[in-house]
Length: 584
Image 1 (tube, rainbow, N blue to C red):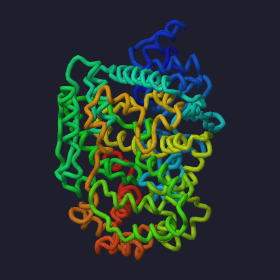
Image 2 (image 1 turned 90 degrees about the vertical axis):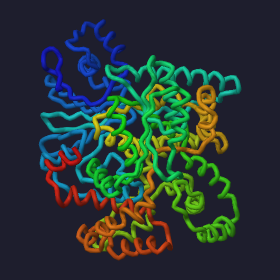
Image 3 (image 1 turned 90 degrees about the horizontal axis):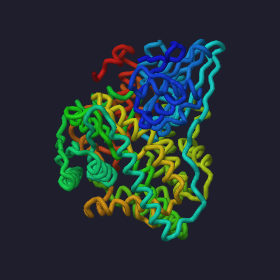
Image 4 (image 1 turned 120 degrees about the horizontal axis):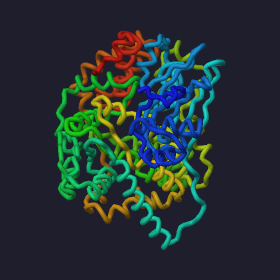
């Protein structure tokens, strides 16, 4: 790349994979188009010739695309429907610059100034949600979005070519449920089969949770050779999911590769900071980096179970949403006074799944309206905590910065349905899934030149599930109700009955031991003061409360640490060229 059509008037640069390219090619050949290669890239070029800017709506895959149309003197950028592949752009006076990484845009000399709204959102979410980036003027193209830039008059248009479809109002009866289960299983098999098409061996990430285990089960039905599966665990038993991964690997006779992590925490965290262009504090990136490194030694492509929580309803917050509707019915003397006071007295443990911590979080959010509660249960810094955290002079410059929940409210209001669960799923699909989960997987896998495909986010599957009512996804307090009914036919009962799994990291312990000195360096009063954003006294107060065991602020400390590491790299020390080579 870049690759052009026959007369050199249409050029393309493309990152990703198109799963329906063979079908599209046959159609285009029937219309008279002639191909010089066997690639999906060339199919996009001819599809654009045929369909113009509507080409993207016909693509099924993961992609970030730039097309230069010489005849019409216009540039078209397109990002896949789910936001699997990243695409950044910056509008300047006389041109548009774009790329798959922020650091590539910085080579053009763009000023590095923090976007205050992006920072405000990062503190609450642990990541920067689109369309903003952490740097003012640099934006993310949103999932399912096109950008059209006219080179002659420098005008730019954004348009949405795809969105999650609305819930179908049709109620599905008992017999209908069985039909839906059959259709869904058939679709899952088709999606996995389509995404296994490759010129190189394809493996799978396997955490031992429902989603990754189901993907491995479906892969095993299609391939002739044993599937290569990859998993990581930790020496701490409460963090180690590897026995479940082994159980699935044995059930489907996979060629299983396992790594038990006992990393140098400081070196690991430094490496993580090198790979992300923005502050990013999802600690599970450490484990995704390790499992990607392991997989890249054996295969070039893997399938993962990512996206299943948003598509099928798998987050514990959906259970909390249901419980909160009952909690709000309690008299104020109980729900607003007595219970919160009692829960505040409970100490919080360091275990990965801490029910005492979850109970505290639930009670804090349950008295709020449904969407603010849904957001509050995931928040790291509340609006009140952020207001205290900001340095006074910086805080005075933040006039007009809206609360983070307002971003979610925009999506919540856009998806008009009385089905509350599906509205929450829409919000999480548009925000958390894109800028946390998919960002994490893309950056950590591409750091090892490993391609990760996410069959549970195939657009056909997403559209099928989106139209179903919420009670087919979460029934009562049972998460992934429909998916589990299907999985009963394929997976061991131990996998179906276990609590939610994933790649987790013992951050709380690290902060008290291996990372204590690093935290002291990067969150020291002089360091915080030099950055000019946060009040050094408030940060020190937060650290002291944590070190003395008065409160558990590990999540907040990790958030501030990862921001400080990013700030050091992007705003203090490194040139754009140095940033491009960091971590290589």
